[in-house]
Length: 129
Image 1 (cartoon, one colour):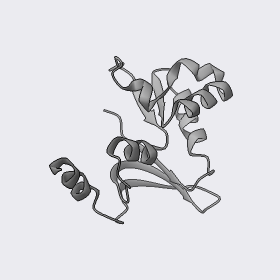
Image 2 (tube, rainbow, N blue to C red):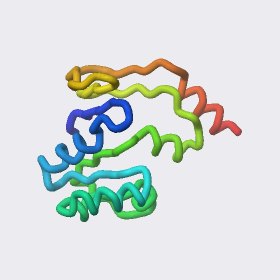
Image 3 (cartoon, rainbow, N blue to C red):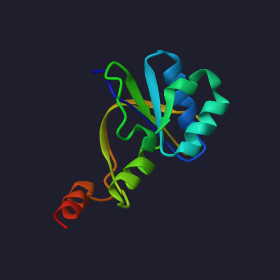
Image 4 (tube, helix red, strand yellow):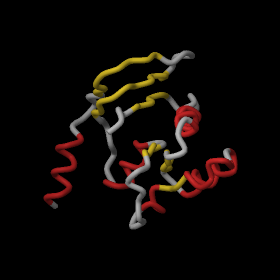
């Protein structure tokens, strides 16, 4: 399994462009978006990737390519739709590019922890209902 690369930044800071650049490095990479409208927008903007961009909704129930490596754009929005919860924190391990409010990205390898709330507890509570 490849090391997970995480891109964290404010809106309009180039996260999707970084994912497109990542996809261009390997023809076996697929991008999943939070909506069909966003998938359509990316297919129009990057026509050479049209067969490799899908919405999260379109991926549900479809046969997945186990050989492919998947990138997910706007994971926070997908998690919120999947769980119907207001996600306040996530924890990931991998190589991250942080851009937040800076002009130049800061490279950093290791675990990323944003401790705003306890997502696991919220998910457990939701399952019990």
